[in-house]
Image (cartoon, rainbow, N blue to C red; front, side, top):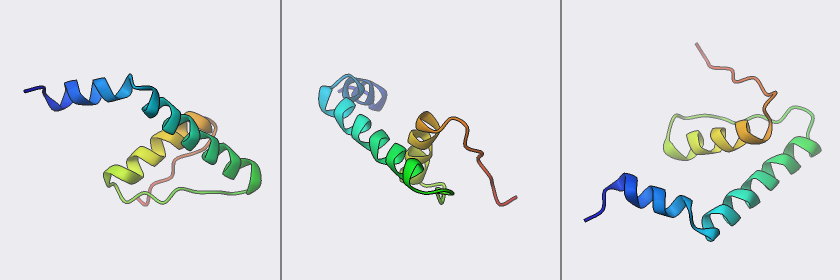
Length: 68
């Protein structure tokens, strides 16, 4: 049985994954172009951490501010 790492690595190479990631990055870029001060609310869960990763790939000049 393949490990979770092997399964994840296989998924990263699929065209469908790359298409979804590119589409997500396009949405983020559109939001940053459209709004003056967009933000990402981070709960620390897997989905918000993934979104933060996409945002940091698209908008490299955005500051990440924490509550502490």
